[in-house]
Length: 394
Ligand code: PLP
Image (cartoon, rainbow, N blue to C red):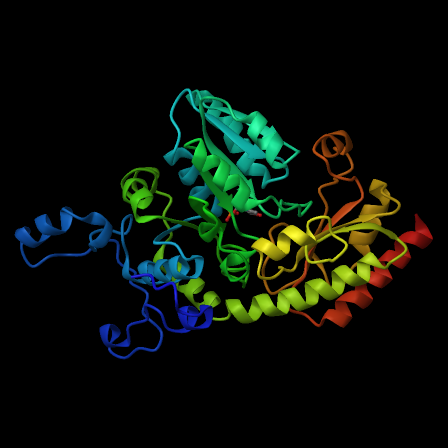
């Protein structure tokens, strides 16, 4: 059903909406029913032959959820998508689908924290794990073990926003019969399509940009028909972390404006990154869209744009400085998560974990901004004010 040649704008506004099927409704309805009934037992028996493509039960296939799955598969240029109840449900299902006791996973540092915790959790099932701060191809190659079955990536990485070479790593993995998974939440399918670079599974927390309105939690997993044919009957249906239809409907509504919102996030993100880069209280800005970024060149090869999530490091990197800046900001709300309409600020430095941060390659003066859809000039004024307060009082 996926047509690689539709534009992103067409996919989000029309693909799968099928007006004739829903009495001309311009917005498809929410199928808020747990099960479907059949005319006779023969019809049910027929549907049971292909649960993936039949409407039987909520924990399988639901028409509202299915429309959104079709849109996201098309945006990611993948054959199939399934939606999950959270990003972590999609991530854990993707990882488990390729692993059994005795297998090894290689992942990079500074990915989403709970994903790394999941690898540690999986040790109790006999799965081992290596984490690497260095992500150049030689290091990745040297860390592959005879039992490595999965390489797990995020590009850019969480908090530090470093890129990894997706094509080079997926080529290497293919030569060794290793599967690759990437968390593509930052770039969204508007700015990066890892499947076209050879990655096997793409996962998203749709709680971020894809939903975009900070009113839902969900996950997406996009892959080939072959992988999904297995995953649907196992990790999807048996672990059971599936997306409810109301959340899918909210997600469909969010997706309508995804290309427009990403353009706005990119424009404001770039303005703010440039502003911070030139600010005397700032030592470094982590944003692959800046020409000064060591990853800029690689970014031009695999990214089509840059999202609005970035971090910067204070010249004075004490916890007191970090605290002062965050508490002085008025336009940026203090909160976890990101990718919504509202600007948010956070730091991984809580005042009691400096050694842990340094060990994982993070500067204690690191502050993360999720640049929302407010006026960028007002956001910059706010940052300027907070940086001034910090430099005068700390
Ligand atoms: N991936 C990234 C990069 C995230 O930032 C998050 C959540 O913050 C997740 C995955 C997990 O998603 P969820 O909270 O929807 O389970």
